[in-house]
Image: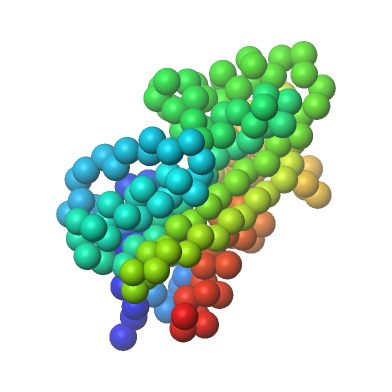
Length: 193
């Protein structure tokens, strides 16, 4: 019998990525699957804080083991902006607006180093565990590619000459920040802890 875990998200892209990582070992449910229609506030000032807020909400209100993530893009020359505000960098106007604002803010900046960071917070058997993944790279001056979401069209990972949005899902999943954090989560879950 598959182990049920709730992934505290309504993001279908993230849910699909996580299900692909976990394969058949776990049944991953998202917030819609458990009937959670609450927009869980992300009011912390760190990725781990936001991830814990979401996992705690599900555990307290649905009594289900849960994990959640908070991810974002950190651009070194912009003091790690957009950071925890990555999804709402342009005031909640969506991915294209976020990318446009980022490129505007980076005009004239030659240091284009950046990283995606993911922190996953798992609450299982009333214990809290956090796992982090980082993917380093640079910000392109113009978007390229149709895959992925968010800042993928302008993020070129280290060691590649294409953006995340130019990679197929399998290739991106093998090197992404979320993949690295998820590998740590999966290793922990499979260890039976």
